[in-house]
Each structure stands twice: as structure tokens, then as C-alpha cells.
Image (cartoon, rainbow, N blue to C red; front, side):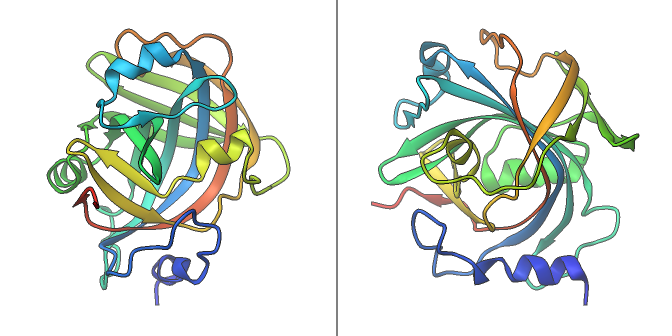
Length: 245
């Protein structure tokens, strides 16, 4: 049996780290995220607040709101009970995000999501009502670095990154935990999609970003980002649902 299939199906064997129990219904799809960079910038809360629906609380940590850029390669994309389809199940993806809360559910708000797969963009827009866009993307590994580029009209990212430290798991209460350990995404409605994965196996990272115009309009990214790397994360995702009362 496909090893990715097995690893995705096994992620629910470990759930004690979640801030709330996983849903008791069937998840919809499995994904694997590889060679992922978390690049985070401090941003004034007032710059992001108008860009997030008023029904959602914009979360802050260490005195700031945060904007994250996460380039990675998505592999093993499949519906529950099926195996990944060669070619269609693997492609680069890049997300721009911040952190929000609705009641007891802290989660992720996406400003944009780029993917190199037209069919995946169309499916995600329809199924999860997320701002996915098709982009020209390239990922390559060279001399220990992951070289990554993405381009669509008005939005360009080009850079390289690599791990630069030992693997660790973020402790609750730390900034790293706040930025990475998120178990749902929010979208307009408000509606949410639950996700689950093991705790992130993080490493500190080095990044050289040559071009970056991915921030939402009106948001300035100043200084060097806080960077972390994850070699792999296996994930399951539930269907989008209206907010629970």
C-alpha cells in the first residue's frame, strides 16, 4: 500500500496535542506538505484588521499581529478511501495567512493561496470558498537549499531557504506554537474547515528572499522574517461547515 496513504490515515492516532477534540465525522481528504517554510513578519494590528471579517477576532502574540508566508510542495492529495493520482496529486503551493479566532476556535485566515494546478485551484475555490489562484511555480533543491518561485499578475515570490537547526516541537505558550499549531481554517460566512496533523517537527531556517510582493494590498513587510522549516507534515481535512452554535 502507498506509504503516504498509510501515514495520512494514521495521523488521528495522535490527538492529545489538539486544543479541542477532532470531529467525530469522517474527514474528506488527505494531503502531505513537504519542504515547507514558515516565514513570519510582525505587522501592526491596524493594518490587518480591515482585511479580516469583523465576525473574526484578529489574534496577536508577543505584542503584534503576524503575517505568514508558507511555500511548500503539496503531495499525496487524495479523497478519503482513494489513492493519490499520479501527476494530479503533487504540485507547489504558497499561502499568505494570518491568525484569527471565533469563540473557542483559533485558526487561520488566508489572504491568498497560490497553486500550480488549475484543477486543484478550481476544486478548492468551489469546495472551501478560499481565495486560490493559479500561478506559474517552480521548486528545485540545489546545494542544500530549496529554490522556490511563484508568479501571477501583481504577485511574485522568488527566494530560497533551508533548515538551519535541530528538529523541535513548539511548546504551548511560545510564539512558535502560536504561529504553527492551528487546527482549523476560517472563511467567509463565517465557516470553518477542521484539519488535523501531528505536532509540527520544526527547525529554525535561513531564507534569502529576492522578490516578494505577496502581502495584501496596503500591508508593508519590514525587516527580516522569523523563519522555520518543516520537512514533512501529513494532514487530513474535513469538509467546510457553517459555524457551530
